[in-house]
Length: 120
Image 1 (cartoon, rainbow, N blue to C red):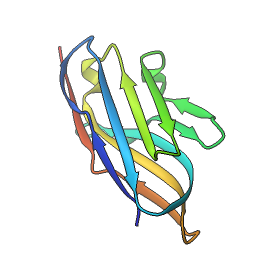
Image 2: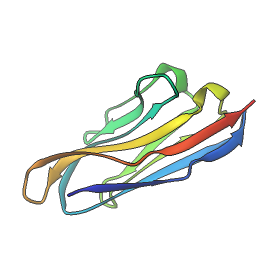
Image 3: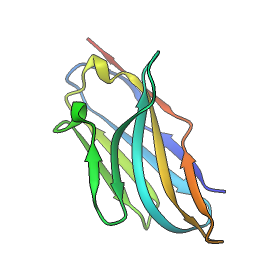
Image 4: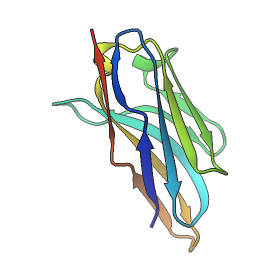
């Protein structure tokens, strides 16, 4: 089983910065993609940023130019640097990693979520 552990959420004033981190544990043969999603109260979970194994990535329009995703597949980590935060960025942020386990079965794992609150 592949488990993800997130850290780095918290309370920050508008205009501030936070960095979220996520590390995977378990027997992983290959990571195909790593990303971050978020879910605000009363809303559906949405993609924030994602990078695939080939380096191709995408960001939500609302975070382009403010957030940066970085990954290290060898260390099984993915981070999200969030700058110029806005109150509308307030949400629970979830890490997601997809790939193949050491038994070559695919996995699609989610972290437990970390709260990010941006005050105005």
